[in-house]
Image: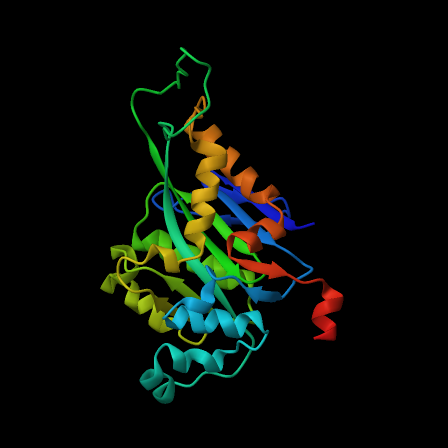
Length: 270
């Protein structure tokens, strides 16, 4: 089972735990899902499509994470020169794969089974509306944070990273992501510099979505929830997606990341 906090935000974002945080009108999170699997399971092995073949620092960090040996000292794999100049206290670390995906009210159209000489009709709102789902999934546990925003600017990225660090106040966070403009803009640099004792970003090579493990989750989510399916409102669509993420079992997260789960007893024996 998993422990999940879900928040639906107007001016105030409230979670089922009773906590609340005030959000500005310009930076308001519509939906928040925190997926936390208390019974953490290590990776038994990496499949051919897993991170073992990734020629990137993100892949190296994931290998350390799969063996439970990832610490803040592995910053040297990402920024070797800076790691020597700016030192941080050694502590447990986690590696997250981050990405943003668009949520369109107009349904995705794809292959569908239909009767002979018949045509399946998919309703459409006529005028499309868009929200943006920002997500971070941890390797290899499958824990994560997923938030729906009105925009996908550096302000939303900064808020998402702040919430991610708040989920793990005692751990160092490595965030693997692509080179989208909201990730590389100089407007984000002061925030990253301020939190260098808690956070290091790991850039992926250009045009390499196959190296970002969360892309597999987005693809699976669209096939299950949005392809050839119309929702009466954009709010209903966002709530359906966050509910789906809440109910997705940890084994599915791990399967999508290309790893095999071990039982806690096997992990202890190892």
